[in-house]
Length: 466
Image (cartoon, rainbow, N blue to C red; front, top):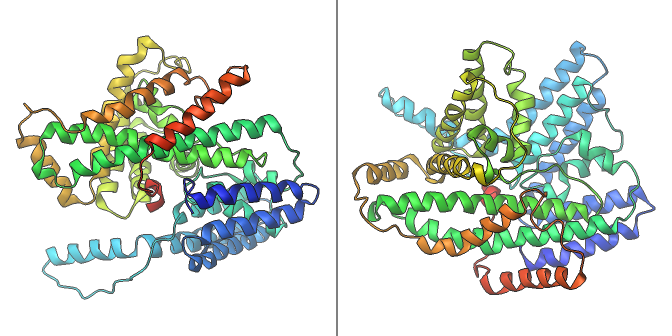
C-alpha cells in the first residue's frame, strides 16, 4: 500500500492503537508489528512474502552461526549469507539485464545466442531490505552488534513497514535494539511525527505528483521539443525526484516516530549544498553511508594514493548506479556522478563549512543544483536510445525558444522558499510557533493545499521501481 493512499490512512491509526495497547507486552507488540508489516508488504503482491521471510530467516540463522572473532568458520558463514542474498537480488533484478547485455556482446562478435529469459516481477523494496540484511551480517562479523535470539524482533527489523519498501536503509545497531526494549508513549515525539507525515504528504501529492506531468510531457517525445524545454524538464525532474523520495522518507520517519522508534535521516536539504561533494552528504544518506562503510572503506577509501582513491569513488558510484536499476543509463549516471567528485580528491582540503547555507552561498547552491540536475538527465532517460534522442536535440536544436514547463515554477518557488526558511530544522515544520491557533492554522492550511492542489492521479513513488 502507498503512504498517500486512503488504505494507509486507515492502516496506520489501527497499528498505532494496537501498538500502544500492547505496550506492556513487548513480545506481543513486536508480533503485532510483524503481522502489520507483512500485511503492508503483501498488499502489493502476497507471493513475495515468502521471499522476504526467506531473506530474514537465512540472515537470522547466519547470525546464530557467527562466533566472536574473525574465525574461518564465521567468515564462511558471512560469505555464504552475502552470496545468498545477492543471488536472490541478482536473479529478480538483474538476470535479464545481464542476459541481454551478454547477448548483445555476442552478436557484435557474430554469434546469435539463444538464451533463456525469465518473466519475473521485481519485488518492491528488495534492493532496500537486502542491503539491510547484509549490513546485519557484516556488523555482526565485525563485532559492532551482538546477535539476537529473538526471531520475531529480528524479522521486524528486516520488515518494519514504514521503511520497508524505500528506506531509509537501517543498521542493526540503530533499529534492532529498539525492538528489544519496552517503549513509553512520547506525546511530543508523536506530534513531531504527525507534522513530518503531513509535510511528506505535501511533498509527494502537491509537489512531486504535479511536477511529474510536466516532466513526462516533455520527455515523452524529445525529438518534438526544443533543447530549452529538455533542460527545463531536467531541472523540474530534480525537484520532482527530491520531493517524491524525501517525501516518502518523511512519512516513513514520521510513522515510526508515532511508535517512538527513531529511523536514520535520509535527506538534509540537499539542494542547499554548496558543492557536489556536500550534496552527496545530504542526498539519500542511508544508501551513501551504506556504500561508504561496506564498499568504499574495504576498497581502501581515502587511505591510499589519490589515483586509487579516484578509482574507489568510480567503483562505488558505478555500483550505486547499477543498484538503482538494471539499465545501462543508471550505470552511466553512476559513473558520471563519481567523475564529478574526482576534482575534490586533488583540491586542497578546506576548513569545514558552516552546517547551513546562507544568502551569500546562494550562487554556489544554484550552481550545484544545476550540475546535479544535468547529471539526472541520464537518470531520467528510460533507455540509451531515448538518451541518444535527447542528446541529439541538445546538440542540434534551436535554443532561441521559450521552454515548456515554465508554469511548474508555480509549485517549485513556494516549496523551495519554505524549505529554505526551515533548512535549520530536520524538516521545515518541525518546530512551529507556540500559540495553538497559529499551529492549527498551518495544519489546516497544508491540508487544504493537499485537497485543492494535490494531483488527482495516484502516482507511484519513483523509488519503488528500485
